[in-house]
Image (cartoon, rainbow, N blue to C red; front, side, top):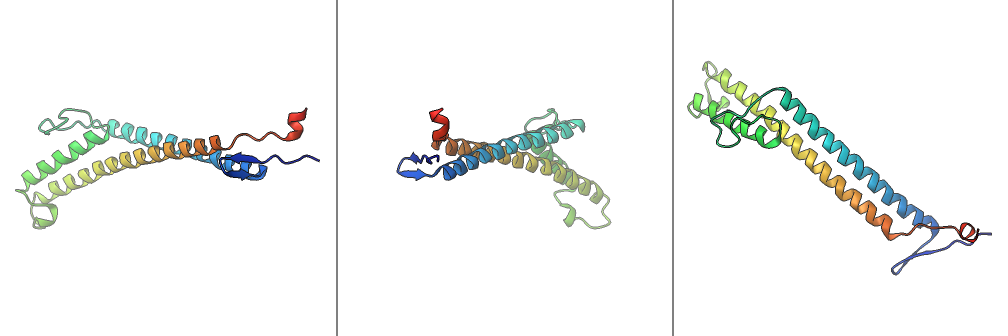
Length: 161
């Protein structure tokens, strides 16, 4: 008959089954964190690749990042802002909803609005990707910490051999 060895962690004593459970939860945290890191990075790369494939450059009259290729969150935001500036200049400061339905500039302002929305969607995608990667890192660190608090159990039969 094998005697179960209890594991003490500070003032807490764990049975072998509970110690295994805690270490398994820690491992799952590390695994889930790794998956989140990889998924977040994959989405970041995918959005950057898709934006880059469009071969958009930030307009030369943009107050920041002028002439830069749009392939990241800052350049996408800069281009969205300058598109808005151009649309408002063309419409004398009126938005799509404020223009009369038969105004010929309305189609231009509508296209600008659609382009801005698309660029802002990519900016949000970058933010979500960064969030997922950050949470993945934290989750993996929590998992590693949990596993490190409970030492590996060796059965007394394995130790005596």
